[in-house]
Length: 331
Image (cartoon, one colour):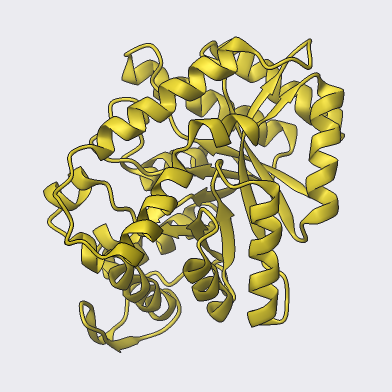
C-alpha cells in the first residue's frame, strides 16, 4: 500500500490566494514525508473547490519537488482538445523528469456543459475518444477517426518522456466504467463515497475482464484526532463540501426521460457527492484507529493507494494530521 494526497483546493475562508497557498503547502509536506502521489481534482465555475486548471498546479509542483508523482483525478477529458492536452501532458512529463500520472473523468456538471459548449449526452463518447487520441499522440504520429475527433498524421513535440504514462479512470464503482478501464488496462480512481465493498467488487469485475488486478487509488477523507469518536469538524467540513458541490450541479436542463439511464445517472451522481457515505468511509479517529482501518484496505485490495483529503478547516491541523498518519504507517 502506498499513500497519496487528494488536492481539492478547498476555499473555506473565502480567500482564493490563501486556499491555493495552503493546498500547495500540503503538497510540499507530503513530498517530504514520502507520499507517492498528489492527485488534483478539476472543478470549473466553483468558488469552493478552486482548481479549474490542474495542469498549472502540477507544473508548479514539478518545479518545487523531486520525487512525488503528479496526477489529476481527473482531467475532465471531454472539455479538452486532444492535441493540446497531449502537448501539455508531454511537456509536464519532461518538466517533472517523468513523474506524470494521468487520471480522466467525463464530468457532467451543468455549468460545464453549458459554458464549455458540450452536450451531456456526448460526454462519455468524448472522454473515450480523447483518451484514444492521447494514447497515440503521446508516443507516435497519430491518425485517428472518431465521431468527434479526427487526426491525420499529427505528430506533437515533445513526445512524453516516460515510455508509457500511467492512465487512470475515475469512477464511483460504475460497472460500465470499470469494464472500460479493464479492457484498456487502466487503473481506477475510486470516489470518496465508494465503500470498501464497492472497491472490492470493482477490482473483481476488473480482474474477470483483464485477468489481472488494477492499480487502484481510493480517495478518502482523513481526520486524525485524539479521540475515536466522530469529530464535529469532520461532519461540518464534509457537509460544507457536499452542499457546495451540489449547488454547482443545480443549474441543469430537464433531461429526456429514460428510466434505466436516469436511475443509473442518479445513482452515480449521488454516489460521488453523498455526504453520509463520505463520512462513513472516512479514515478518522486516533492514529491507532486510522492504522487499523488502513490495514483492512491493505488486506482487501491489491495494488492499492489511499489518497487522503484532510478534512479540517484549520490549515495547521491538516498539516499535523498528515504528519501523524505518515508517522503511524512508517513513512
